[in-house]
Image (cartoon, rainbow, N blue to C red; front, side, top):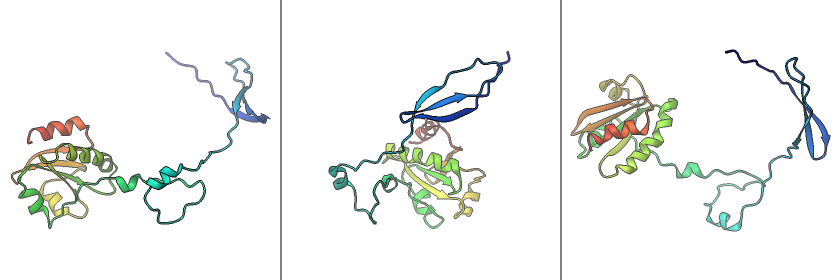
Length: 183
C-alpha cells in the first residue's frame, strides 16, 4: 500500500493588521486551496510577578532586568552523595544495611537520565537502603575491580559483598525488583 506524498510550500503574506494569509503552492494532485487567516505573532508578553511571589523568592545575587526569566529549580535539586576510593570501605563494604551504588560519569547521558530515579528510590527506601554514586572517571580502580564495562551500572552490596547489578538506564520497576530482593 503506497501513500501519495504531497509537498506544500507555505508562503506567508501580510494581509491585514489582524492576521497573516497562508497560501500553499499548488500541487498537480491537489486542488487549488484558498488562503487561511492565521493570527499574527506579536512576541512574548512578560508581566511583573505579584509581590507575594517576590517576597517568597530567595535573595538574588544580581539585579534582574525587566522581563528576565529566572529558574530556581537548580537550587532545589537533590543529588546522591558521592563515594570514592577513600570512602568505599566505610560507606559501602562496612554498611549495616544494603547499599546501591550508581557507577556513572559526567559525560554519560543515560547516567544523567537515571540519576533522578535513583534519588527517588533512595527517598522511598530511606532507612532500608543507602544510595551513593561513584564517578568511574575519578575512581577507575573500583570500577575495574567490580568489572564495570558499561555505565550506568547500579550495583547492590549487602554485608560487604556484591549481590546484584543492573546495567543501563532501566525502568523504575526493574530497579525496584532488584532492590526488593535484598531489603
